[in-house]
Image (cartoon, rainbow, N blue to C red; front, side, top):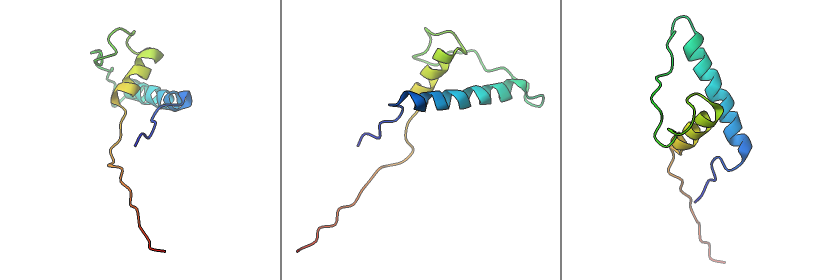
Length: 78
């Protein structure tokens, strides 16, 4: 089963928007006031840290499913 995660460019762009909002809140909220640790994600080292391209790479590296997809088939005698 291929759920085709992130196949459409809008999927990645929606996650990019949210990712950037979280980083902004994390770095600019007085109570947190902590920059993102600048250690590159494996597979994204060749991209400029905190650029949109870097974040897109991070999204693709860490996206996946938490569910075990299953199905049922009911056979009926006719």
